Image (cartoon, rainbow, N blue to C red):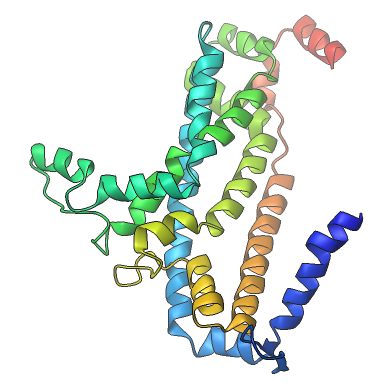
Length: 295
């Protein structure tokens, strides 16, 4: 309790107070009311450009990452030998991907004379360096994010192993193929895990900073194409010393994440994981009884 108060609640309260002040880290905070918020929402086009960069990134990176994680988890579930090795190998990028060194390597791979550009040139695709291209630079960060699919994959794998094989066996006896089984059994039974991973990945994606900082040189280059909300927050707070304005940006980011999480929660509440009646009719009575007794 003391740790939560000292390390979480107290800093949040101070940050909320600073968001209503003009504070430059050197002089005492001066109360300005809602000026930081009104300036941010009505007078700062660069803030909206950062939002316009962050939102498409989240919309693209999160589904790709979760889709890849679920696909690999389903493959590992059916793997009898070497599962522990592959699980560890796929999980490793999640431990390394957020580091400065990996971001530097990633930048080197996608620059003008990098490996990726060389491979594309060898097959006749000349796009130049991705890092210096305003239309492609953000996808360097997207690919680095998707590469770190190991953490949600492990959670998906744990959820898949909790689904009773009797359900798939009964559906197979009823003539259902792999796709109907996935839609009617896997997705409904896995929906709490999907929601959990979705919320975590949305939060992590909104907080992306290190890859964008390294790949863009800390300036959101080229042409603000990688100026994510967190990077602009850092620039206003620590480069321009407008800490009050940066605190207001942080609270707007918190409100946005909380609103998206609430919407996801309400949507999931109306989609409880249960099998359709058509699938239940295909499960033999004694199988249902055994499953119910096991639970």
